[in-house]
Amino acid sequence: MRLTAQIKKAADGWLDLHVLELPELRAHARSIEDIPDAVRDAAAILTDRPGHDFDVEVRY
Image 1 (tube, rainbow, N blue to C red):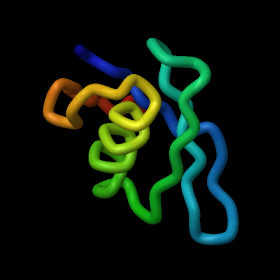
Image 2 (cartoon, helix red, strand yellow):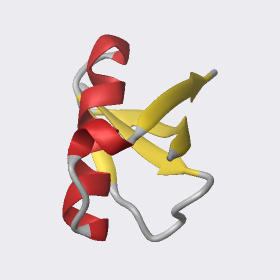
Image 3 (spheres, helix red, strand yellow):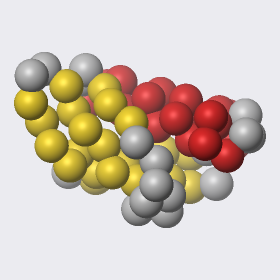
């Protein structure tokens, strides 16, 4: 499943992430490089699917 992550807010050294396909998903990352893994982990918990099921695209 493809997920599109966008940075919603950047404060206090954290990036708050919004995912277009799963608006109820809440994820945070320390850096831009950490976004795909943070979104995969949160999506896996939310959907009860394995993290490798998700292909994350980051939009700026």
